[in-house]
Image (cartoon, rainbow, N blue to C red; front, side, top):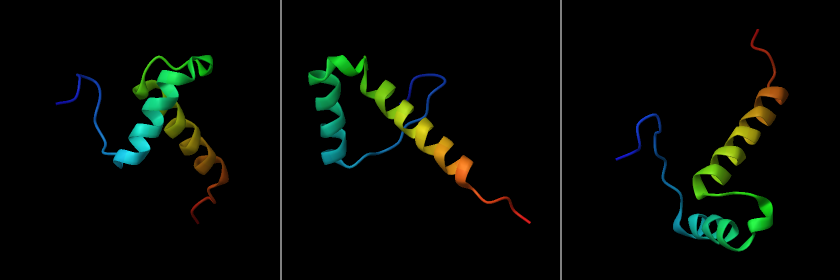
Length: 57
């Protein structure tokens, strides 16, 4: 069950393992957790989509 204030999503195992390895081995990136990396990645992608979205008419 997710922590209060959070929801959960499912990732393919291969992708999860890549993210986990990045957090563990690339400490220079500054991510303290898998959640932190995934949240920032999703946030940035959503911003890209919102900026490029055509306004509804």
